[in-house]
Length: 138
Ligand code: NI
Image (tube, rainbow, N blue to C red; front, side):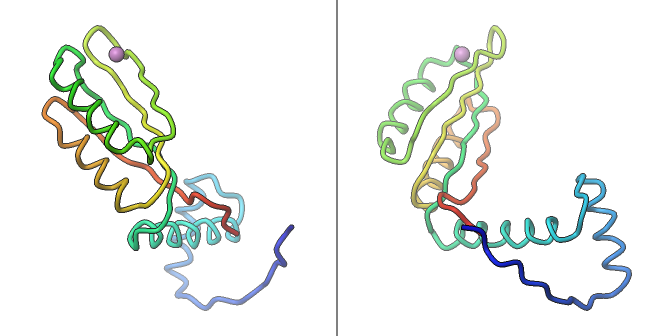
């Protein structure tokens, strides 16, 4: 079901609006309404993350697969958190390096701990997490 569109006026300094328009043009937005709605959603999702609500996301890990001990540790950690892991995709980037994409869903604080444990492992060259809402938002 579509939400009712509600119009409202916002008063801001012209210099701020000018900067905002420049920013959204660079990000390929064609109108302010979509850009503002996306900013609001971003803040709502960020608050969900900060307050330990339910999120969905992806943890990415870049590592050297020749370090056998690392692989065992990564697997152990993932088994400990298996109820938050939806799927894992492994990509062989080149002879040495692997990229792992772990799709996650559940409590933000648990997923944050999972991401921290994996990213801090010796041998992981880079890791990050990207998250969004796990349920429909307006
Ligand atoms: Ni690989």
